[in-house]
Image (tube, rainbow, N blue to C red):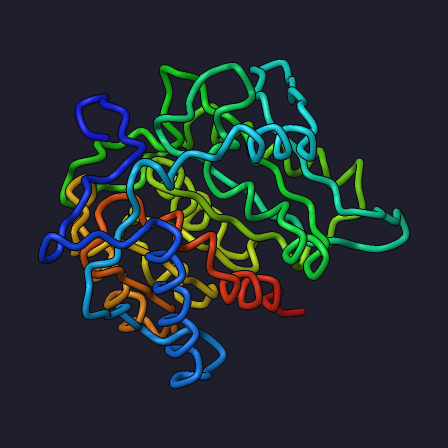
Length: 306
């Protein structure tokens, strides 16, 4: 992701010349996660690094959706463009099944990574969105999901990706600003529970999660940033927010020590963040994360205090 390069996969890892099938590796992650929840049943997930006798990784064959999955995701997510006098932002919208205007529904904002930038209003659906439309998630957690798409020549947050630290920019980038204006617009169109607006994102999109959270610390009920971190100096500002970051211990794109340092800063400020670090996993820690159904149970149980 540094130097303007697009990274949408991790390096393949080998353990004793024995490979685990992709699906089996993901299942192993989920089983270990379930055991962790059994051992640490607190309100927030404890600071758990998933451990196993094998290095559990995700390879290219498991990263991209199959054609059938992609077609199904595109059918479920409406294609729209949010337009204002100051710009336009393509986005996809998932509406709850059997939507009832008299009921309020939570909203999830998903920020994609660098490889999904563009103007086709399709690429941002590649990661994670197939999990949100899966039967078990949709039937149990009726919600809106929006997936805006950043232009090819932009970043959600204008900061060097490979830096050891960064300061939050004085102003949000244009696509990030438009994404927040989009949320305000959707509140006027649909019945959205303003106490249950959640944000999540991966890689370049993870920077967006930290950035908007630090700019608007009382606006979001919970946040799930994946494989990146925010401005550590502003940790105290968001210590009260339910947070569950994820990172691969072998990430060569964004050093996981930055996330560990942020967790320490949040805890020092009185926060109780969750944290999951995957041993042996590189930059792609999002596939196992969005496949983890405990994540959804935790996320949708959070709400802003009255």
